[in-house]
Length: 186
Image (tube, rainbow, N blue to C red):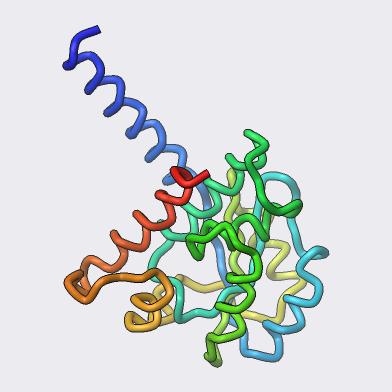
């Protein structure tokens, strides 16, 4: 196989992966702190089947839908390939989301974040119409665009170890790279 053929195969694989990640569906609703805590306490009960991951996240640590989609994709893949650390896919999602394989570290990170805005986020492999209907029936929260919450760039720098040499415009790329690189450490 020539170098050109190898490069073409790698580019094709990257494009397939990008398509699979971008093909995931995201929906979210804005929560106040007390409602978020209620969902966290019953997170097992709000999982919407094998094709979706539902989780509560502080709004200030969400920089893009790509971040959510990549973490969900990797969590789904970890379960399919039996590389998962956690027994629950929504916990595995948090591990990828925060770029660590240590559950205790994720819990400490979450406990250290203070905000009044949380999002109940669901990432699905299938159409989210049923998810939106579920949200409407079970949540007293507004289904919203992710642009409603503003990421705390300094907090993201600290959580993901983003060097000061990385511009604010490139933090998202760094965060995505950190999430994706977790696969290499397994």
